[in-house]
Image (cartoon, rainbow over all chains, first blue to last red; front, top):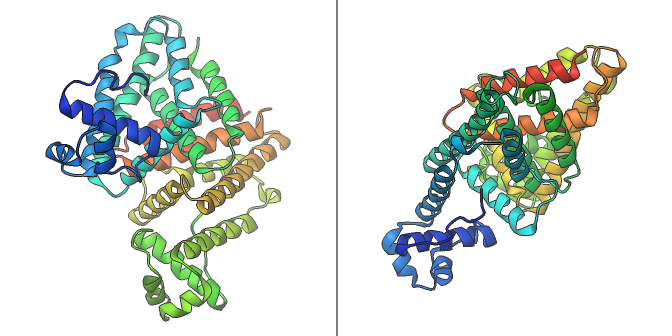
Amino acid sequence: MGENLFANPEGTREQILAATYRTLRQRGYTELTISAIGEEFDKSPSLVYRHYDSKDDLVLSCLESMLDQYEQRFTEADVTDPKARLSAFLERGFPETVADDRRQFITTLVELRSLAAHDDAYRAHFTRSDEVFTTSLADIVRAGIDQGVFADCDPDRVAFYLFSTLAGAMQRRVTTEDEAWIGDVRAEVEQYLETRVYR
Amino acid sequence: MGENLFANPEGTREQILAATYRTLRQRGYTELTISAIGEEFDKSPSLVYRHYDSKDDLVLSCLESMLDQYEQRFTEADVTDPKARLSAFLERGFPETVADDRRQFITTLVELRSLAAHDDAYRAHFTRSDEVFTTSLADIVRAGIDQGVFADCDPDRVAFYLFSTLAGAMQRRVTTEDEAWIGDVRAEVEQYLETRVYR
């Protein structure tokens, strides 16, 4: 998730969300202000306030829209090569090396998730977000089983497990100095897939 | 980690850290203030300030002390039953159900870790913390291999992998509404251990 989001925003609300997305990617949550969005959007902050009550209202709407766009693009029928699809999902989740702009965005997502520990609106978002991503993963695994390329495993269990590992790796990557361990985690995920999922 | 920490604090600094630990467990990071520590400790806030410059200095010293206590207790030579030891580590990390006070403390740890995304001192702490825990895990796996009860696997890889899954599960548990998935993750971890680690 990330590429081509908000590519052609139409209408004021979508343009505001696209500017919010760019700002979150480039500057993070702490530095995001309604004024900064106004500048990025090349409009006055008052126009932003006409559509969104607060910074968190704006950020949550942006997160929801990102998730909607992901959901609209993902359809199980498209999974023609489940193994490649699963690899792409994992590569996106924890690449061995990560570019600075992507690292900034992962950092922002980890910070936003930590808000969910005390904020019901963020918690509701990340509950839905995890459901969407684990459902996609389970759909990929199910397609692999149906097509006879994956072994007879439990798609939901595999999905929850892989997604938890991926969430932990994302979190640890942006909260520690060292990331030599990422290669080890990747190698062990492959080992798990070889013995448990791939036929 | 958690039980019996700061059981018999000696001296003012240790008593302050013990009070900080109790406050972090019961009230969390956001509500922690130097004044609250003074009250908990039954001394004036000025005494706390004489030993610690700021709230974060205090919290970080508390985290460091917790980790030191864990390190002092863990010795590889004590791993007489590697399988039971590994189970206990994982049970501690993601139990199927979690009591309210433990949930509060996991929430606090997830929040503190998110500070590491932007704060070098917290980042240094969580780098060391992850090193300590993954080293313990690897020591347990290595003991199992040496004693002939575990298969010939790479202890470091297994440790980094299990720890990332555990970190992700802790984070997801306190940032989503649902935790039905925990049982699935546990079951899949067991499956992984059966095929990859246990002989």
